Image (cartoon, rainbow, N blue to C red; front, side, top):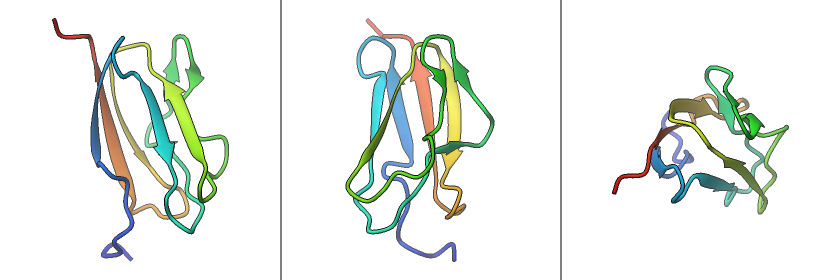
Length: 92
């Protein structure tokens, strides 16, 4: 049901390389979720992006981004849950 309140918060995460490019998802819900890229993405340094299975309530998934990229992602069991990342070079 797409009108359920649970969602990725914030929906768009701006990320700057070398500043805040380690992103941590924390599951504050009472249901397990995934962080699944809409299109598979492999970071040159960190490897495949996406949680290896579900992120259980009270746990985290983290990923270090090392290249400019725009990524959209969703939760596999709850496909209406969507989010996106915009990774850019550090602005001086």
